[in-house]
Length: 115
Ligand SMILES: [Zn+2]
Image (cartoon, rainbow, N blue to C red; front, top):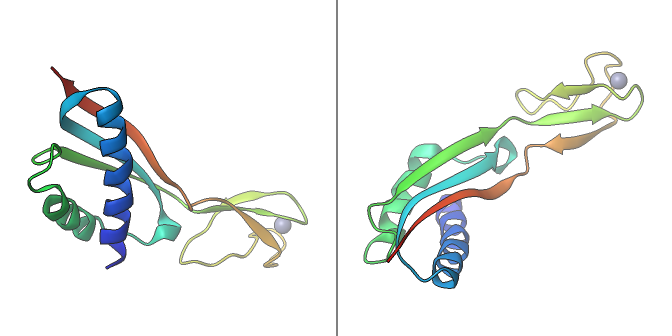
């Protein structure tokens, strides 16, 4: 499952950070995810709950912030939000665009319990 591999790499980063700070438990994790990653929030939560069982992150809160997909037209420079994966400039109606946001997969906040 796509979500499980994301959770696994997320937790690798989380545990590395927790160890660096000598934290005993992880309280909250906030993840910024671009819509291009095509994550299903419920699946992500489900995978997170499974993957954190028996770890210092068990029972911690997972917050998800979705980042919209935006692109910039190479002809007129307009930045627009991409809906339905339609990479078409609303002004020029060409697909000569570059993606600006939507690919994010960022561990934004991490709350640890340091004892
Ligand atoms: Zn344009």
